Image 1 (spheres, helix red, strand yellow):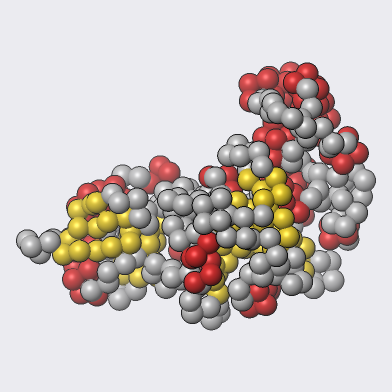
Image 2 (spheres, helix red, strand yellow):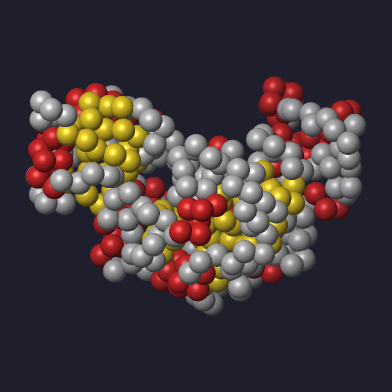
Length: 372
C-alpha cells in the first residue's frame, strides 16, 4: 500500500482548467483509485476522471491496466506462443505464409545473421550497398524487430547514389545518412528492442484520403479481436489513429489523435488527444490539415474487418489481440498484432469496458471482475 501511495505521489499530474475538479479532489481520487483498484495517474488522466462531470459511478465502469493484466489476460493467451506476435520477423513470415497482405519484406538486418529475401547476407554496410545496387530500390522503411509504440523506427524515404558510387539516404525528418553510418546505427541500437535486428520493408503508399489528412505518417487502425467461449471471433472495439504533421508515427501516446470507430459501419464517431498532448476532447477536425474527421467512413472498412478476423482465426492460443492495419493505395495491409494491447486507447475513446454497452463482450468469461 505504501508503495502505491509513493508511486502516485511520484507521478501524479493535476489538470487545471475550467470544467475540471479541484486540485485536492483530483489528488484524493487518484490515491483512492490507486489503493482500491490500482489505477495509475496516467490512467486517471487518460480517462479524463478529472472532468467535473465525471461521476464516481462512471469511473468504476473503467478497468485498470492492473485488472486487465492480472485478471483478464492470463485467461486469454498462452505465453509460449507470444513471440509469433512480438517478434516482427516471425510475424511477417507467419502471416504471409497464410496469404494475408502485409508490407513487402525486403531484408532483415542483423550483424550476425541478417539476410535478404533473395538469400544474400545483410549484416554490414557492404551488404547494404550491394543490396541497393542489385535491386535499385529507391524507398524503404526500417523498423526494429521488437519495437513498441513506434520506437526505433527510421523512415528512410529517399535513396540517392553519390558520384563516388556510394549512397546517401534521406529520412522523413530530412536527416541524411551514409550507408556506413546507418549500418553502424542499426548494429549498435539493439538495446532499444526486445528482439535484435531490423526489418527493411517497402514504404507504404497509403490511401489518398488518409494521406490528405496527414501525409507524414501512415495512419492506422487498431482493432481488438476476441475469441469467445463458443470459438466465434468478434471485434468489440476499434480506434483509428492519425499522426500529426511532421511526425513519422501515428501513436496516440506520441501526440496523435485517436477516433472511436463504429465497428459495423466504419464511421469515425468521436476523437480525442491523449491528455499528455492536449486536453481537447470530442475532436472533429485534424488540427493540421483541418479536414473533418467525425462522420468519415474509413476506406476499405469491410476488408479491414475481414483481414483481422482471418488473422485471429489462424492465431492459436491467443484469444485477444490488438491488430494494427494500414490502408494503402493497393488495399489493406496487416502491420502488427499486439497480445499485450493497451486498454488506454480503447477505453479512452470507446468508454469503460464495464459500461453496459461494452461489458457484454467480456461478460461471457469468468474473470471474477467487479460489476460483472
